[in-house]
Amino acid sequence: MKASYLSTIALAVAALSAGQAFAADTDAPLTREQVRAELVQAQRNGDVIADNESGMTLRQMYPGRYDAATSVQARSRAEVQAELKEAQRSGDVIADAESGQTMKQLFPARYPAATATASISREDVRAELREAQLKGEVIGDNESGKKLNEIYPNRYPTAVAQGKTRAEVLAELKEAQRTGDIVADGESGRKLNELYPSKYKN
Image: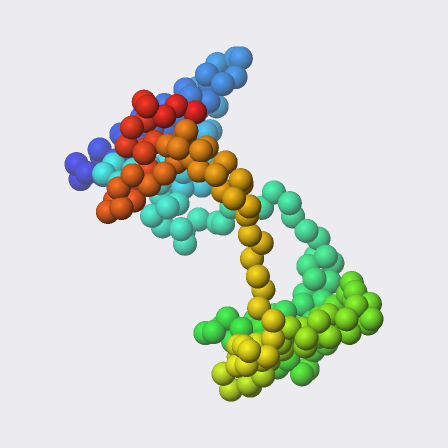
């Protein structure tokens, strides 16, 4: 009995404080009837505090007792039906509730494949194929999925990284020494500018 009485008092205080907060937002103060109407609306929607320990509202504790929040952008019945027909035609409706798979995923032969837009010409594709064959970038073994240049590395040229000149390397070294961007301790991997930040200022 006491707990329900205390809960009722807490609800009333919460509703009144919510009413005062709303009243502070507007220019004119709310009347007693407006506050009562807001309380009744909050109780109807389940937006009042239900449990003082958790601070949850009635809607959060018992979502089945209250209507779902209405969406702002409502669609007409015709729009929904058209969308459903399109989903059924393309196989984008859920077929199996357990797996969540669509009809298109379960029965791909029944539905048209997604049309791919050709962005490159046939000649470009042939040129890419010739280049891949010359480099050994085509699948050579179906079981392992290895490419020809992985199976026979001596038959295909290897890509050589662009080297730097001695002057470029020396310039990079001087810059790293100046900024402390050099590993100081091999064990920790920390750089000089991390160990001595006051010594190396950018």
